[in-house]
Image (cartoon, rainbow, N blue to C red; front, side, top):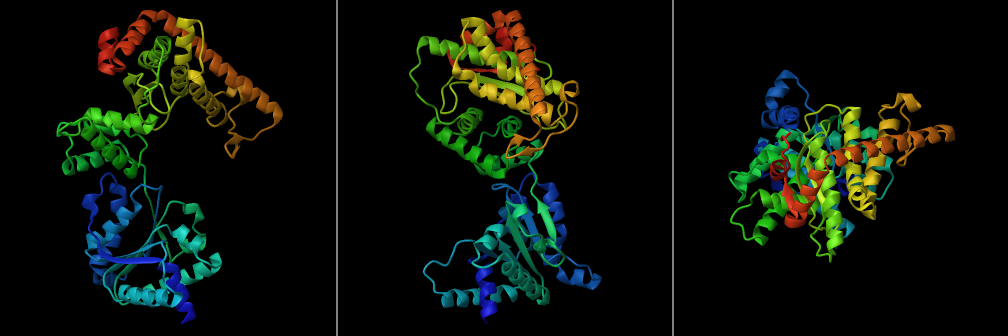
Amino acid sequence: MKQNAKIFLLLTLFVVKLHAGVTFNDIAGLPEVKSQLFDVVSYLKKPAVYQDFGAIVSHGILISGPSGSGKTLVAKAIAGEANCVIYQINRATFIGMTPAQMLAKCEDLFAQACNTSPCVVLIEELDVVLNNFGTSKFDAITKLTILFDQIKSAKDSFVVVATTANLDQVDKALLITDRFDYQVAMPVLDLVGREELIKMYQKKAKLDPDLDLRKVALMTFGWNTGEIIKLINLAKLSAIKNNHDIVDISDFEQADEKIYAGEVKQYIHTDLDRKVTAYHEAGHALVTLLLPDLSGSFDRVTILSRERYVGVSIRLNEDQKCGYSKNNYLSGIRVSLAGRAAEELVFNEITTGASGDLEAATAVARRIICRYGMTPEAVGMAVYSQKNGDYVYSQALAEKIDLAVIQILDDCYAQVKELLVNNRDKLDILANALIEKETVYASEIYALLGIEPK
């Protein structure tokens, strides 16, 4: 009885029996994940077919991925697709219960699960559950092993699905055969997947039926499901605030800027501050439009002050590229340095406004040298190890790397200054437009400057 009590206490910190309300139709942009789980769902639907063939389907599935990537939703969709009961196990405790009461409830709930066919048991945050268990990791793993023995002895279909945001924290002993031996990694949504997700919400919410789904998807490069849903909700709040009947693209742009740069702040700017900011951002935007090797497409530039920035140029990243060239990275450095270069060109002075740009440019230059081996003439093609974010190498090599970083930054700065000098008329036009309108879109800039759209 004591050993059983420990098993139940480990796996039922909080257990809820429910019928899944979601299916794979509620999940967008994850075709590979759905395909991977086909056999599991099919087994839960028709276990006898698999038994007749002697085919073995894993009883333990581990879904890994960052928070917000949709792990729990996928687990629930497994049960929803199979139209079966799911028992959800969380890390919350039975507040106010005595050990005896907890044991009684756990025994009752787990007994129901064992006798339910088909059935899914979902253990959320497996690594956290194990780490919070008040005993050694070895004991916790042993008790999980006992649980899987019980599952295998069950007469009908029974699958345990666990999720984790920290796969490296899950003991390897749990990943062997007959335990969590089937792993599913949640991928980063690609452009098509993100567009599908937004389209799904377009049908459910008051989103503009003519909304440019591709543009919104481009805003969310590298984002997971949870982050995109947050953007959609912020866009809804923006629509309400702006008295819009439906959520349009401007609401998404405001939501995007809020996530990236924070809330709008009513700073008291002098005319000179406003002019310096306008030229700084005009420098970024103009160089973005003039450079041929820059990835992504320019969208808009604003000098509307927010918590983290007094202005920002926004580029929408395409994610079809499999790799980036040295020129791609150097162009990115030039854009980062363009704000400072514009300030120096126009005012013969520099401000602290470029400090973040300098940090970004320096980080890219150091990656070019230390990670990508793109400067063999300076330090060779070796990749240098990192520890706690710092590169580790000899003092002599460190001096060579520092000189190479400085050389990259100096060259890029000289090039971008020359570009701005040769296009000073365009810089003035764009800066004046920003002073007048605060936000200027790519289509307006192309018309103002007579630049061919990329």
